[in-house]
Image: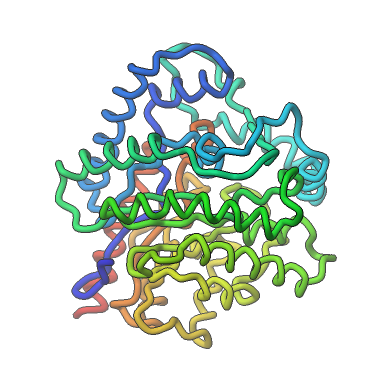
Length: 402
């Protein structure tokens, strides 16, 4: 994995706003409407080539495929896992989860959910209205978990590597989910315990992880559910009970990563992508020991979110293990305000002074579009933010290497 040996390198968390053609096909599939699979394959290949080229033009050192081949950061996995069955309705446990999450700011949440998935949707070639975009497909585990996503994973790898062949970058990554991301309450209807379910999911995802690394790409594991699940029971839940659950999830992830070189792995956590209050987020200080337990070389952690930006000071007392990298988010994904490059440089310098400049790479808090129907900012703003990230990293490099 590349390090910031002569300047601060730049990357991001993975997802970027998809092209209208890709969104249209994924919308049709989610709504169980017909679409042309051959045309979609061509649109997907062309879209990945475009988004990789654009990242290189902006100056991103370590790009992704934009997650163009996935319906969402997490939802894609149900199509690649055997033993899962589409639920006709949300399980009661998940309904209660959402109810508890929404109870703190009910008026805000009701208004937010009306616009969350449609505000920055591109104009679709089919002319379909964006209201149909608010779709949540949930799958129950009703049998032994297996991995059946080889063809889809190979398609994503081939599209990405073909696009990378046309640009000059030395590292590139593909993001996929952690076992914990599949551990929504109430989904397991087959295994005797959540632990058994998590480890079965880890065994299946191990195959996906290995395909990415064997293809010569960096593997990024996304684990937003780990910190987000605390929100549901806060502030009344027992912190120690939550930490026991979280440690079980980390252990399952390390089981999924067995045999994979640490220097090919990035681990990403955030507190969700919502432009929401976040008043019950678990502090980073309470989970950092678990984050650093993951068998990865780089840790991508949300740090530009105004609820968590102050946590850069945690590294005054927490030691980054030798040989590891931190990829702090120094640009936010959930506001259309574009960060000033000097602010980006200041954020980078805070981490570099505490951890060593060679141990820091500049990133984003989270992806800019976690699903075909979740564009967190307008596409034009997305590219402006990535340009500010690059310019800020350049300013920080001049300061740190002068």
